[in-house]
Image (cartoon, rainbow, N blue to C red; front, top):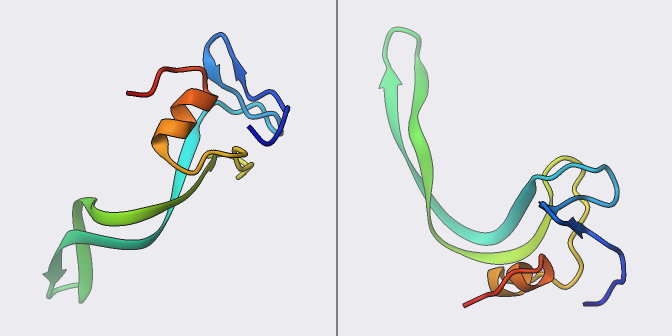
Length: 88
């Protein structure tokens, strides 16, 4: 790990900058699709359900709240190890 900054405790991830516990993945070069409908009365597109990610490159992992980037986490396996887990 490139940094000695602590970002885990007994319950998992904790952001050293803001204290939030939520993680976020940031991806680039993504191929994403989502079902759409058009309402002719309101002339608006309606997004249905959740978007599906078909292909993407992981750029980094960060705190969902403040955007603090987890140092050295460039893939899920490394992230799991940095968080104290056992990657398969």
